Image 1: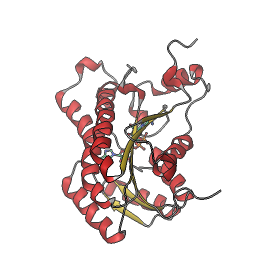
Image 2: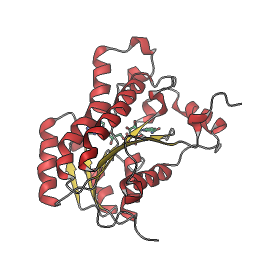
Image 3: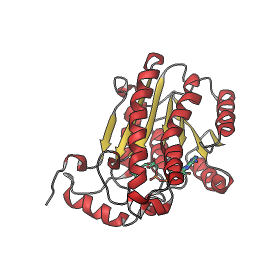
Length: 258
Ligand SMILES: NC(=O)c1ccc[n+]([C@@H]2O[C@H](COP(=O)([O-])OP(=O)(O)OC[C@H]3O[C@@H](n4cnc5c(N)ncnc54)[C@H](O)[C@@H]3O)[C@@H](O)[C@H]2O)c1
């Protein structure tokens, strides 16, 4: 089979460990022949991400906390040295206070709301603004979202509101960047056990509930999300922008499942 991303340079933000969805995406990108650059969020993650990057034969690992404009600027200047163009960017980043993912939504604090929005939604806009000038041959920007943006999923709370903002941002960015041949899409993944999802109260019950009624009668494998990300980053996805692509065993179509 031909490699779908050969000759492309991809930047993947959001690998924290090998359970990260971004790690599965990065692995699939390498399998498909992409030249890979990873980022880590501060010194605390550096060693782990560097080890994973070595396994994946990534060309470079760079620091970037998306809430720090100087770090984003530094990332851009290091990328400019490294590669004449970036073809694919994956934004696989979210954060909310644990308290806000367990108590009633009505108790969400202003600070908790703003934090979730800044890290999980605004960062897509700042990443797009910083990196699109490097995507001189056009390309693809993909983010990760979840059904809690449009439906109530118990305890997802403030993150559901952030994902709603993220999905709206995908549409506005797709409109802005389309003339530069940059496509912007989101993958709405079914629930997957990761460090982030473990912070959501009763998450294992969500996994069980989905597997019981989803059309495919099972949970989502991160490798399936990764293959969809390959499609969007590749020339096969050239006509797709502003879209939310569900990779969730079909759960999003279920009204009442028995
Ligand atoms: N796990 C699921 O069930 C699921 C389902 C749908 C969508 N998603 C989304 O997938 C994405 C990845 O999450 P995951 O489940 O792989 O968990 P994860 O914890 O492995 O990844 C989250 C990443 O966000 C990064 N991050 C948080 N704050 C940051 C900051 N200020 N600057 C830079 N990076 C920061 C973390 O370092 C980490 O790498 C998130 O957007 C999440 O909402 C997850």
